[in-house]
Amino acid sequence: MKVAAIAGSIREDSYNNMLLENIKERFNGKFDLDIIKIDKLPLFNQAEELDPPEIVKTFKNQIADYDAVLISTPEYNWSVPGVLKNSLDWLSRGERPMIGKPVMIVGASISLMGTIRAQMDLRRILSAPGLSARVLEPAKSEVLITQAHEKFDENGKLTDEATQDAVDRAVNNFHEMVSG
Ligand code: FNR
Image (cartoon, rainbow, N blue to C red):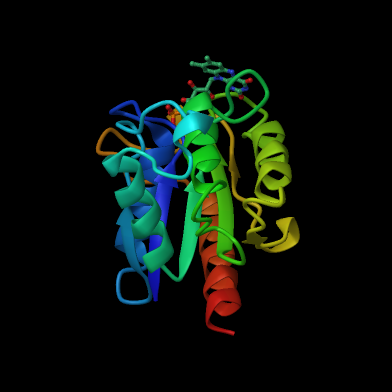
């Protein structure tokens, strides 16, 4: 099963990227997971939506090739970061590879809110007609990492047991959804 993983943060020491790296390593064998970078995508321009820049075409073709998409989003000002929304806007116009695509949402934040508002917004965005993704329901995928700076060690390994249990449950539910 091939899964494209996207982090909504492009900073080097991103907890959301760490979370994806942890999932990639832990579920190696069950998922063939690749982290797809969105940091070089240009800003969305509607005038280019039918014939986008080469880097955007490559990104859209990449996403189309995967069985499923895993998104780890931070929360910026109570919503998803602009870089993540920008990538989704490209995916929503012209060729639309997200339609019907199984998606799981997870997220990590350093606050006590654990990206709940960003994840709710992301669900709404992914249900827009141009995206129409098949998002794993919250009851099966609640990974809302609070105080992320206390949950990962200096090597980026997830060390919090309760969080790991929640991640394991969610990822197994996602596997069931995609293979079922
Ligand atoms: C934040 N942060 C934040 N956290 C949160 O829980 N709710 C929020 O609304 C915001 N808003 C916000 C805005 C901006 C512009 C920044 C830069 C940060 C803090 C955020 O959770 C923290 O920086 C995370 O570590 C970002 O995720 P990565 O980069 O570690 O993946």
